[in-house]
Amino acid sequence: MNVKYMQTAINLAKKGKGKIYTNPMVGCVIVKDNKIIGNGWHQYFGGNHAEINALVDAGKNAKGADLYVTLEPCNSHGKRSPCTLAIIKAGIKRVYYALRDKNVLGSREMLEKNGIEVHEGLLKKQARSLISDYLKYLKSKPKISIKAAMTLDGKIATYNYDSKWITSEKSRNLVYEIRSHYDAVLVGLNTAIKDNPFLTTHSKKLKNPVRVVIDPYLKLPKTHNLLDGNVPTIIVYDLSIASIPKHLKKEGIILAPVDISMAKKDFNVIVRKLNSFSLKSILIEGGSEIISSALFSNVVDDVYFFIAPKLIGGKGAISVVGGAGVKKISESLRIKNMKVKKIGQDFLITGQLDKTSPTVI
View (tube, rainbow, N blue to C red):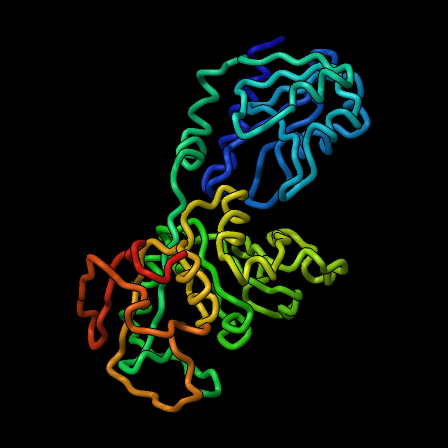
């Protein structure tokens, strides 16, 4: 056991600051014969964990070595396969981790069962500062918001799906700022295809959220802006899909399989999946079917409705809330604590969803 190796791991972990979103900063070194033979840290959201990067750096020399890592290795299948399996396969002799991860189950037991000596608590106090934000997110309640830009008659697109631009540039700039306060911004496939958005803050000063697109059958084309690699993109698709298109197997793209049939009935399926990636605040930007599903699944906390002084008309134009809708006015969803603000020629209406509305399940 050597304090200086754990300190090196802590220093490496800090390199991931600002690049891993709500995931914890983690660093790792692999030591053999009193010499560091492998360095690694969690470099970006959706990328390899620190242990994997260190093991790759060490290569075959990792056999019989000691591994120092700032946080307990994971032991479950998430964005990546468990680090415990990679550690066992590499032939690591001893593992030292500074902090126990309460979100991890059976890690130490798995390692010890396979003959690996495990030590916990080295530089525990120093390593805790690395995961303070992560711990806050584990305790926090997910926040789900809806943002929509519409005309005075409640349309978000014409009958042929044209929607650029309904609101003013001033309103759009405010949307970019709003996005920076969320972990993720989410759209459905239709919105992604029709608008081809970047879903970023369009600014070097503002934090970009993780981009999420619900693409059940992986139809997003390889030239789409959401696949540009500049910001991580999570693609939520149906777990029945066995063949993954080649252009979706690259850095910056995280594939998230779910039961889409269940998700259509209950948007909580999507929320829980995103929460598993430590994404606790999600801004839903459409389209109408996604908005409807979220609203009537009782997951929405508040709304941002931008209204432009325009009229589209037509039965075929797309309304802000799709789905089957309610049968009676008495069953309608209600917005409480509503505020109205003028944004240039547009209006912004904000408020919270009344969870006591009759149709909320």
